[in-house]
Image 1 (cartoon, one colour):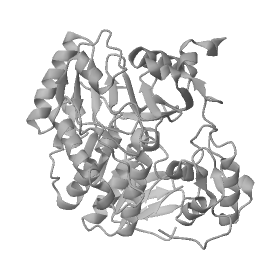
Image 2 (cartoon, rainbow over the protein chains, first blue to last red; image 1 turned 180 degrees about the vertical axis):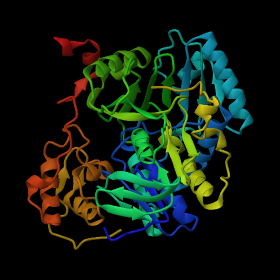
Image 3 (cartoon, rainbow over the protein chains, first blue to last red; image 1 turned 90 degrees about the vertical axis):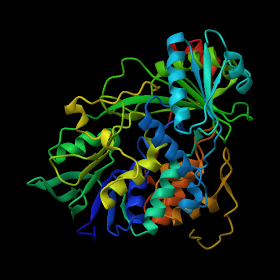
Length: 384
Length: 98
C-alpha cells in the first residue's frame, strides 16, 4: 500500500460507502480512501431486492426516500455512467389486508401527500387494474405511487465508485480493516491487513458488520446482521409493472426490466448473525405465498436463490451521524433493509455533515445517541 | 471506457444464456473487474438458465490469461440453488421433502 494517510477513511464498499466517498470528493475532499474487504457491492448491496419506494410512515423516511428518488431520476448524468443504473419508475403497489392496516395506510398517504409524494388510494378492484392477475381474496385496499420503482444495485454502486475515483478518491478492494487507533477520543489511524492509514475521520458504512468496526474504536453500536432471502425466476415477457408489497404476508415481488421476477418474504425466528446460506424452507414458503397473491407466477421456473444481510438497528431505522465520545467517527449504517433506496441522499447528507458541518436534510434524529435517550423512531411500514 | 486491442475472437459468445461476448469480458477485465463475481454482476454472464455452467470456466480462463495467474487460482463464485430451474408450483407442493 503506497498511501500512508487520508483525510477521511470510508469503511465499506457497498452503495452507501461508495455514495459517501463520491459526495465527499464532490464537496472538495481530495484525500478520501474507501476500504472494502471484498469487492464493490459484494455484500448487502449486491444481494438486495433493488426496490426504491417513498411510501413510508415517518416524515424523515418519506423525505429521505423522496430526495433519493430525485437523485436516481438523473443519476446516469449526475455520475456520468454510460451503462446506466437502470432506474425505472414503475411504481409500488402496497396491499392492505385488515381495517387496521388500511387505517395506517390512510395516515401514511396523508403524510406522503403533505410531503409532495403523489400516492393513490385504491380499492381491491382498483389494484387489479394495475396488476390484472392479482388475487383479491382478503384484500381491503391498496396504495400506489407511480414514482416509486427500482434500480440496478450493482450498477448504482459501480457508478458511484467510478465517479468517486475520477474525483480523486482511492478505492482499496480486498482490504480488511483490522483495527482503528483512537487516543483521547481522537482517531489516529485505520489499520488494515495491507497497512496503516493515518487519518482523523472514519465513516462506518460496513452494513451488518458495522458493530464490529465500531467496537474497534471502542464504541458499542447496536447494529446486527439478519439473514433475508430472495429468489429470481427465468425471464418472461413483461406482465407486471410495479413492485407488489404485502406487510400482512411479509412479501414483495417485482418483475425486473430483464423480465425475471424477483421476490422475497421474511422468515420468522431468523436469528441474529452473519449466515448468508440460502434455505429450502424459504423456497417453499416463498412459492406458496406468491402463488396465493399472484397465482400465475406458479408457472415460472426459479433459476436462482440467495441470501444477504439486513443491517438491523433497534428501531429498524438507519443510524446516521457522528458518534460521541469519539470525535469524527461517523455512522451510516443500521438501514434495516432500506439502505439501497436511500443511499444517494444518505451519501450526500453524510458528506454535507462532514464537510460543511450541517446537512441539507436534518438527520439529527437518526444519531446513535437516540437509543440511550430513548428517542427511538419507529417506522410502521417495513417488510421482509 | 478503456478498450483493449480488438482480437479476432471478440465476437465469440461466452455466456449463451445472456449473450455476453468474449470481447465484452475482455473489456470488463481491462476496466478493472478482476473477479468472476464482479463480471457476472455487471454483465449478467452466468446469471441465466444454466447459472454459468459453461461461461464461468471460459471467464476464468480469460481472467487467468489477463492477470498472468494459473486458472485454478481464479476464485469460482458460489453455485446457487436450485441446481436446475424448478417450477414455483412444484416447489409450493413441497416435493423437495420427498
